Image 1 (cartoon, one colour):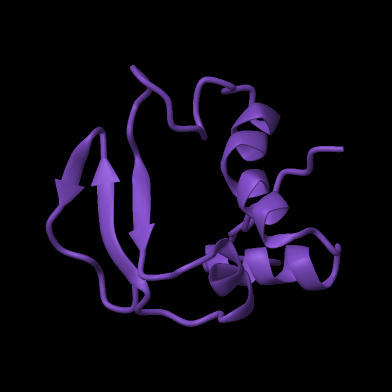
Image 2 (cartoon, one colour; image 1 turned 120 degrees about the horizontal axis):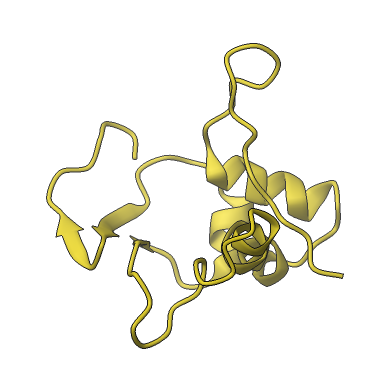
Length: 102
């Protein structure tokens, strides 16, 4: 069963903004594999929001993505730490500057 994984960031009950922490919780609490958790943050998450055209890479799709300095998806899920993001791409264009800790 596909599961969406997200932060639910809000100032009241859930001030969490770290997607990697949510990947970790999806793997450790809900026993998703790192690949399943990553799909939950991308394709399954987009589908849950009624935007099935987003969340996957394919020809002609809008390209908003992050490039991480990792060797496998498990590193995102189990090594929750800032500073591993190498590059952001928004609308197909590289974003030059990364925010502190991003």
